Image 1: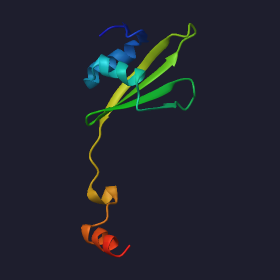
Image 2: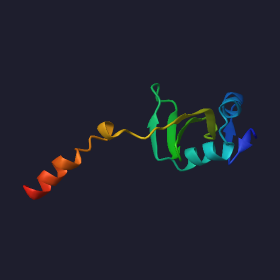
Image 3: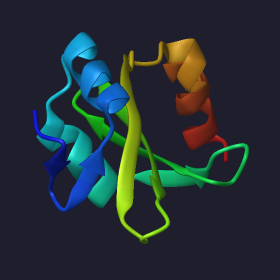
Length: 103
């Protein structure tokens, strides 16, 4: 893993988290570069970038330094599980059939 990768600076903390969590530096960089979503952090000094890779959601925290260079501060991921039928709120088939017959 490199301190300067993809045109951004990676903190020792971020590199350590990549190693601990088994996240590829390229996946973290791609999450930052082309996220599915992003938001300000609570203190609004940094951004959190999100991207889903298969069943893993990678999150990258980044900010700009005084020289306006991007700095990756931390990285983590979590497994996304598929929602159950009740969590997806899909009505049972019999309700969908009745609704189709009697709109």
